[in-house]
Amino acid sequence: MTVPRAVDEPARLGPDDSTLIRRSLTEAEEFAAVFDRHANAVHRYVSRRVGTVVADDLTAETFLVAFRQRQRYDLSQPDARPWLYGIATNLLHRHRRTEVRQYRALARTGVDPAVEHDAERVVARVAATTASCRLAAVLAKLPVGERDVLLLIANEEFDYADVARALNIPIGTVRSRLHSARKRMRAALADLDPRTHEGA
Amino acid sequence: MNDLELVRELRGDPPDAEPAVLLSARFALQREMRGDTRRPGAGRWRLATAGGLAALLAIAVVVAQNGPPAPDGTVNDAAGILDRAALAAAHEPILPARPDQYVFVESIEGYHGETYDCDGKADQSHCTAIPGPVKRTLRQVWSSVDGTHDGLLRDRPAKSTGAWNETPIPFCPNAATVTNAVPGASGVPVTNAAPATNGARGANGVPGTSQPGTSQPGTSQPGTSQPGTSQPGTSQPGTSQPGTSQPGTNQPGTNQPANNQPANNQPPTNQPANNQPPTNQPANNQPATNQPPADNCTPRPAYLINLPTNAPAMTAYLRTKANETTNGDLFTAAGDLIREAYLPPASLSALFQALGDVPDLAVAQDAEDAAGRHGVSVGRDAHGFRNELIFDRTTFAYLGSRTIARQDAGKVTIDGQSAQLRVAIVDRLRQLP
Image: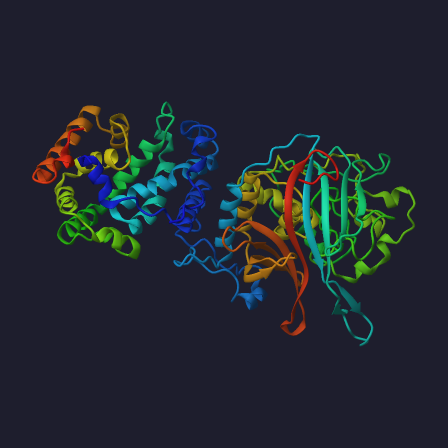
């Protein structure tokens, strides 16, 4: 797998996101730097949820929406990632059916439709375990709010505060949704290897 | 492995986004940022059919078509290639420089040249071009970063290991000489450029038509064979070798018989008229007209730190340059600008983006530069020539340029080529990186 031309590599250089966004209020083109920093990450996030086909479109859309809404950005936040992921998550809800269908298929067949067009990955994924099938089944049934919280934390390593910002919900809600989602998962995995549900 | 890790493992790491996908998204964003809603959707390119360009439909088959890069990853439309080049340029590290240093550029110029048979039929309205032999020259140029120090050009036949032919590039060859200086010269961005007028077009093919702005580095005059006027001095009497000095980078109209005129054959005196700096101005050929007196010692930085860094401003800047020096041809002006100067990544990127908006671009999937490297090229027909910029096929780094002469009966000959080999910042003249 080749890393694309380091689209998010320069992230550690230069002004922080809020500075760029503030500048973009008067100099629109400044917003391009926000894209360069985060586009790849947004694409990966969406791709992990619904596959690359949707991610290709949704990444572009996310940044268009973000650009149009940049006046609403909270300039006290140096990192734009939660804001961008929140926009992407909202857009993802249009693809909720696709997402659920993919998890269902994965649960039944052990093959992930979101990645099946990629031969190499299919081979790797064929070795689906009982755990992953059950997990997919849980994810398919999770309330969408819980799934958002769970996937931001598990896949994107967001902390509670980031998730709260992304989804525009109180931290307490983040905590309770995560707790609920994990309870469902542990229940589904309870009779398997006990190491799969140690506390966290 | 806890449950959260299991979730993460469920799908593993997705493949990275295809660069073409991100580019497509980035340019959608840029259209939005420019407030440009005239080109909705992914396709950002269309044939210009307006205003006298219909004749160019003959080359429509190779003109870039609508649409994003092909799904298989190949990029075969001009806008796509320039988009990739822009992204590649943007991610190059910046070369830091101090004002007292030099921009070093090593390149090969290949000049195929032509002689002209203008006798023959009585009613002949043009001369017949006879392709000449190829000459390749290795050039090393040291140009002052801030434009206030003397520079140096040295060159020799590309396959030679013999002595260099050195040509000084004086910063201020003769302070008494009257020449012209323009606002916006030498890397000062012109952001409020007037919309393109065709003011310069009237000069098409008229060698020696005087235009303002000729003292700018990196520009060239129609009707002359000097592209890299950032190597001023090369056309100075007594130092240059007519016919061999600036091959390969021909401008529209540059192969006109005017080149064979003894423009540089004047005696190497120090008369002001011959000491016209650096820019191979038409004044060497003709009495200067319309040239306001100005300081001859205007700095001509080779480190173009003040150029625009976004596409619209760069377009405006190029338009000004083009109207001054290349008969309004943005594409040629861009080639002149980058050939032997240093553009910081943001400006070089903006330049390639700006070129993506130029109408009627043509793509060649296999174009060879003067060093024999093959890449893809984007070019534009102008005045009987097609000037092309060549990019690496996979990295989309700028390699060089070539000029194709389109001759009768669709016969095409390579007229000139260049290859940029090294660009670096050094402390002293003759110092190699």
